[in-house]
Length: 245
Ligand SMILES: C[S@@+](CC[C@H](N)C(=O)[O-])C[C@H]1O[C@@H](n2cnc3c(N)ncnc32)[C@H](O)[C@@H]1O
Image (tube, rainbow, N blue to C red; front, side, top):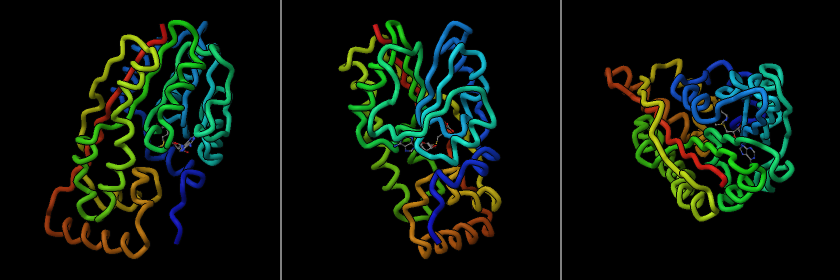
C-alpha cells in the first residue's frame, strides 16, 4: 500500500495536529497580527498553527502544494489559499507582505537558498520572517525512530539543510536573526498514536519505509510496549526569525 502523502492527509491531519501553545505565543508576540497587516504562511497545510490568527490580519494568504491540506484549511479559516510548490518560488508579488511564517515545512524544500531569497523578496521593508523547524538534536530525541531502521537517517538528511537557515538569512540581508528552542515537550507513544504515524499526520519520515519495513517496525514497537518500554517523542522545535531591513 502506498503511503498517502499530504494530499490525502488533510482531514486526518486536522484531527491530530492541534496548535501548540508555545508556537501560538510566539506567533502572536513576534508577528503581532493586526488589522493593518498582511501575512503569508508557507507550506501552510491545514493552518493547524496559524488558523487561530488568520482573521486578525487584514490579509492572510496560505501557500501549499497539497490540495487535500488546503481544502481543510479553507474550511477552517479565513484567507486566500494558493496551491503551488514553493520549489518554484513564492507565487506572490514583491514587497507585498508584512510577515511570513513557515512551520514544519522547510525540510520538504530542496532549494533552501532560493526559498530564503523568495521570503526576502515578498516581504516589505521591516517585514518579519519566522521559520519553525527542528534541530538535528531534536530529531535524534525522537526515540520512536529506533524501531524503524532508516527513518532517523532519512530525517537527519532532510533536516540538515534547515540548520544553515540562520546564516542564510544573515547572508541574504536579514537583521536581528535569532534562534530559540520552543514547544519543549515529550509525548509518550501508545498504540493509538502509533497507528497514526504513517498516515503523515505525525511524521512524514515514515513514508520512506517499504510496507514490509513498516510492519516489521510495528511488531518491534508492539513488543516494546508489551515489555513496558517508554517510547518518547520530543515535540520541541527550533524557531528562527529575522527582519528585512
Ligand atoms: C508537516 S506539514 C506542516 C503544515 C503546517 N505548516 C503545520 O504546521 O501544521 C508540511 C506541509 O508542507 C507542504 N509541502 C511539502 N512540500 C511542499 C512544496 N514543495 N511546496 C509547498 N508546500 C509543500 C505539505 O503539503 C504539508 O502541508
